[in-house]
Image (cartoon, rainbow, N blue to C red; front, top):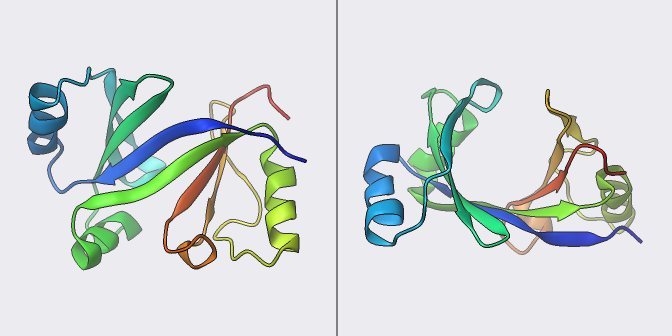
Length: 138
């Protein structure tokens, strides 16, 4: 059985990253590790470490993107939770065999070796769940 390792991050969708940082960094006191523009996801993301996990503040960078449409429809707030696994391909196969609705049936391979896939909210009680495998695992 594929091991679930840890909660990697919680992603919060925001319309304005700088405004959101005023709360998460300045008022709540979380440290800002870095901000990264992820062109493949049409997003600018602020990474705020919290123990073994992170809070990710996600701002859409393209008004035609899925993130922008989600933000327009749902408003700001929780976008997804991400769970690190030791073997993402095996976990996806396991979930598929159980009839869980997936957005990605195969892992997406990132340039740095990370792999990720999303479970459809209909398959996870209304929550968008990302599975994540670090390079060198699996």
